[in-house]
Each structure stands twice: as C-alpha cells, then as structure tokens.
Amino acid sequence: MNVKNFFVAIIFFVVAAVNSISFAAEPTVLADSAILIEASTGRILWEKNSDERREPASMTKMLTGVLALEKLDPLSTVNLDQEAVWTEATSLGWSTTDSLAVRDMVNAVMIVSENGGAVALAHAVAGTTEKFADMMNDKAKSLGCKDTHFANPNGLPDANHYSTAADMARIAMYCMKNPAFRDVVDKQHATVHWLNPKDKAMELANTNELLFGFNGANGIKTGWTGAAGGCLAASAKRGEIELIAIVMHSPDHESRFTDAANLLNYGFERVRMISGIDKDRSEKTVLVRGGKRATLRVAVEKSFDFPLMTGEDAKLFKVTYDIPKIVDAGKGIEKGKILGEAVLNYDGKPVARLPLVARENVDEGFSFGSLIVEIVSTLFVK
Image (cartoon, rainbow, N blue to C red; front, side, top):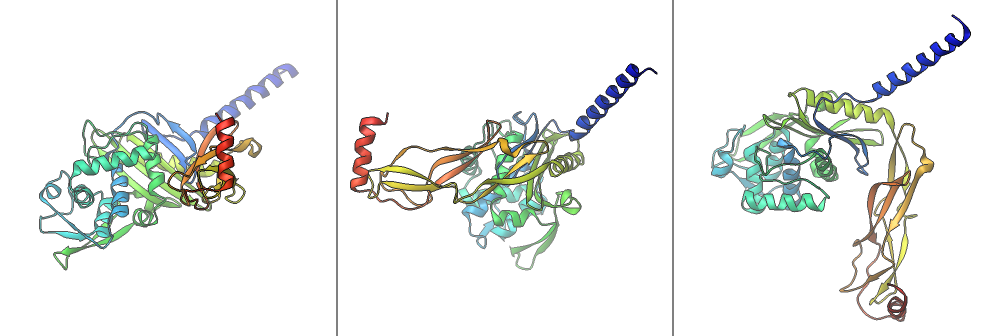
C-alpha cells in the first residue's frame, strides 16, 4: 500500500468511527412519540414526533392526582358512587358503600392506575366527571399545553381525549413540583386503608417497573390501552440532575420501560448543570404608574441551574429579560405577582422561560415619583 492509499484508509477509518459514535449516541426508542426534558427548566434534550397527537391512556391520571391533592384535604372522605364502581377496568373491587381518605385514593389511582378511583376523585373535586374534565383542560392550557384535550379523569379511550408527548412532559414537570405528588409516585408499594369497611386494607405494588431497578427512578405514571399502546411518564434523579421522559404508543407493555430507560440514560450520560440564573442577580427594577411608590423590584423566585449537553459551550448561554418598562398599580400589586419572564437562551435561541415576580407590595395611590412616571409615560412611552 502506498502512502496515499494508507492515508485514504486512515480517513475512512476515522469517518466510520465518528459515524459509529454518532449513531450509538442516539437512544433506541421504539415508541412512535417521545421526549426527554430536564425537570427544573423543561429544556428539551431529545424528541421524536413530540408534537404528534396521541392518546395518553393512564398518564392522564397525573393531572387527576395533582388536582385532587391541590383541591382536597388529604384526610377528607372520597365516596364510591355507581359511576365509579362500574367504570371499565376498575381493579380494586369497589362497592357503592366503600369510602377512602383522599390520600389513600390518590395512592390507588397513581400506583395501580385505578380507573374507578379516578372517577371518584373527579366527583369529590368537581361533582361530575364533565366538570372535572373542564378543570383539567383549564389547567393544561395554563401550563402551556398546545394540543391536549381531556374528556375523562382516567384516560380510557375517547375520541375527544388526546395529548402529545411534549404536552405530557409539561404536565409531568408541573406535577413533580408538588411534594405530596412526588411522595406518591416515588413509592414501590403502598398500603391503602378503607374508611368503610373500617378494617379493610390492601397492599399495592406500583405498575412502574423502573422504580424496582432503574438507578434514580422516582416516578411517574404508566399507561396502556389497545389504542394508545404502551405509554409512560418516567422520571429519575441522579445527583443534581433530574430528567423526565415521556413515551407514547410503544408497541407493547415492556418496551415502554426500555424506551424510557434508554432516554433517561442518554440524558444522564450527556447533561451537566451550570449556574443559569441567580435569584438575587436576576433582580430588575420597573417603574410604577398610579402607585404609592414609583419603582418595584422584580426577580425570579429561586435560583436555577441550567442543563447543557455534551459539546455545548457555556459561553453561548445568555439570560434576557422580558418585562414592561412601566406597570400600572391598578388595584395594587401584590408581592409574588408575575410581571414578566427571564428568558434562558442558548446560542441565541430561547430554551426556557422563568417567571419574574414582584418582590414587594405596591399599593394603589399617589406619590410624586409615580406622578412623574405618569407624565413621562404620557409624553414619551408609546
């Protein structure tokens, strides 16, 4: 072999090796739709058809569970009515005389995917499944879901019940910020106690197989119907990094767990956290019109680290602020009110948004400073 051919062979070898590494870097995901996000910022780390509309099956119960925990006293009573008892694929053998505490019913719904229990929670919160579905849709919209509509609290097939992997990730991210919700979905087992019959109890094993062997697994919810295929919202935390994976329409029961594990491992191997935004250094001042003071401090509520993938440069990370120059005191501004956003950008593209909130109260009224703001805004601010 001459020198030229030798170097050509070396180049082909290097290219083949690089291609092999790049190919191997991609996670194997059999599901038709999937997404991987970092849990604190929602930054998308990997996706496959994540905006494609699909049936979410029992991943629906994430929103049912978190709404029940938000709206009900955990020790209050949930009664089983006829609609709940006769719900399809109900597994705990309910009768219309049964009752449980909210916390026990949420455990049943989240850990073994109790369909009738989800209906019972919906009735306890809103009176009917239809009104509860309206609440679910309102909450989904407030979370930024773009192509989601719920028709029931459990995910049983319905032509008007759908979502996307991206929207399910938004919902999962929100739910995992609730400590009571996290405590439920992290359990491998739980004992559910009845209020009536008084001495009845049942040990439940979580349907989420990742909790029984995947390093760092801490949630969230399985899903399966013939139409939806295998679905899974999976989360795991290792050190300072927490990730959420959503898979929808996996071909069978087991591949959803393999898909999610592959996604999570992919993320943990490639993500590192950098200091993204410090709550004190994020502080900005806006002018106030019609208030007893003329200025108001705004900032993010807590510091955030930011996820970077392998090969990404921290120097390309920037924070910009989307806030009005002047705000109206109106009926007063309460501490904690959202007045803008801190936009986290990587390489010039927005990748996460964090709310900027008022750091103090401003009462409606008069001050010389706010009068000057009023005059200046009238003359110069368009």
